[in-house]
Image 1 (cartoon, rainbow, N blue to C red):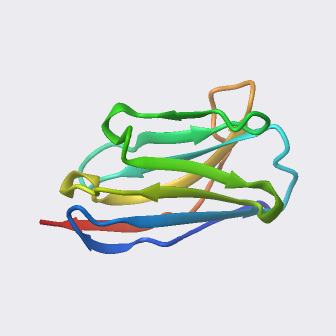
Image 2: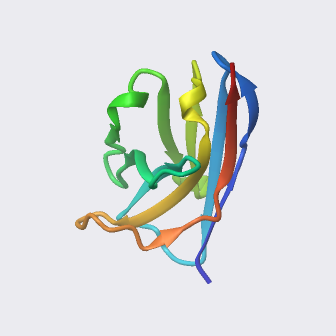
Image 3: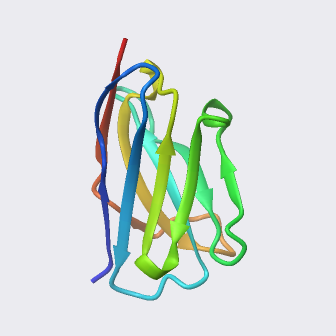
Amino acid sequence: QVQLVESGGGSVQAGGSLRLSCVYSGRSFSDYRMGWFRQAPGKEREFVAHITWGEHSTYYTDSVKGRFTISRDSAKNTVYLEMNNLKVEDTAVYYCASGPSLTSRYDYWGQGTQVTVSS
């Protein structure tokens, strides 16, 4: 059974930092892209960042560039999202997801972890 389990969410003040973790299991994720998405109350889910399997190439949505860093430790089957200089508008449920490298889809999703940033 494939599982993606996020952790590390919480409540912080604006300007603070959090590191999210996502442990994946249940199948080989070789040649799978790992991504982070988020969904704020009343809004659609949006892409945040992804990292590729082989070259660990990364890509970010504009609003988090320079503040968030995605990384993966394949030996630990874990992907991270380091979030610095958090803003109130970063408040959302953050989801880890994975999809085949040569496609744009995400086949597997975690249950989400809440991040709340207060002013």
